[in-house]
Image (cartoon, rainbow, N blue to C red):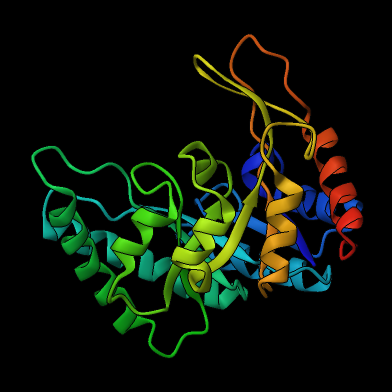
Length: 270
C-alpha cells in the first residue's frame, strides 16, 4: 500500500519541513501543492525546483501527484485552450520532478451553457493536452469536485477521451452524492489514478467537521480495502483540512496518526 499526504494541509511549511513531515510519519510519498511560491509551481526558479527534485529523491519519497489549479469548464473555447496550455506546463514540471499525475479541476458549468456544451469544449482542451503529452509518463487526474463530484458525471465527461486523462478520487464527494465506491468503480474504476482520503463527523453551515480517519461517517476502511481488492496500485493521500469556523475538528497530527493506523490495520501500510 502506498501512503502519502498533500502539502495543501501544511501550506505554511517550507518544502524542507514538508518533506520532514513525510519522513517523520513513515509515508512513502508526498503530494505537492502546485502553486508557485508554495511548494512547486511553474513560476518558481529553476534552482529552487532542482532543489525540490533532489530533496525528495534523496529522501526516498515519491511524488504521486502535483496539484494544478486549472479549470476546464470555461465560457468559450479560447478559455479552455488557455487552461490546456497552463496544464501542459504543469505536466512538463511534473515530468521534471518525477511526479506520476497532475491534478486538475473542472470548475462549475459556465452560466448560459448546458453540461453537454461545457463537456464538448473541455474534451477539446483535453485533446490538446493529450497531443502534447503523447510521450510523457505523467497522467492527468480530474478531481471529483465542483460540478463533477461523482463517477457517473466523470464517466460521461471521459467518454472518448484518451486514458492519459483520468480521475483523482476525493472520496468525500461521491459519498456526498450518495454514490458507493462499488458504483464509482463500475463507472470509472480503470481511470482512477490517485485517491484523496479524509473523514468527517458532520457537514455544517460553512463547511465540515473533520475527524480521525475511521471514526467519522465515511466508510474509509471499506473504500481502501475495496480499491486494493480491485487492483488499485496508486497512492492513498491524506488531505487534512481545517474544520468549519467555530468548530474544533481533528488536528493535522491526529489525522495523520489515524491515517497511518488504518493503513497498518488494512495490512499494507508502512
